[in-house]
Amino acid sequence: MDKDKSRHLDTYKLLGNNIKTRRKNLKISQEELAFRVSSARNYIGCIERAEKIPSIAIILDIACALNCTVIDLFTK
Image 1 (cartoon, helix red, strand yellow):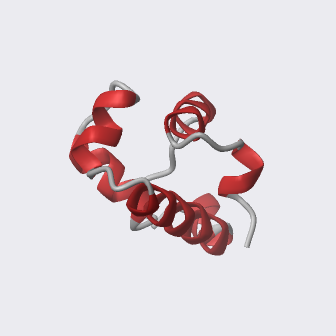
Image 2 (spheres, rainbow, N blue to C red):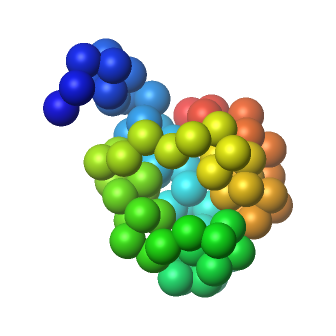
Image 3 (cartoon, rainbow, N blue to C red):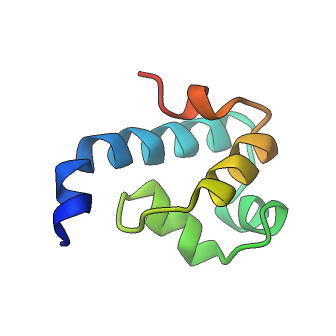
């Protein structure tokens, strides 16, 4: 794990958990979310498990697809 990711791992875990929770509340699959943000299903899974660091653009697209704000995705 690189230094930047390990330093902010709690933040990435919070982001991933919030994405997963919101996605499940909307009853959409990882595949559907990936389709909505023009990404791959396995990439969405990696974000939810905090294995990948998404770009700002992807975070914005995910927030839009989940009908929430970016701040919602980073709030406990």
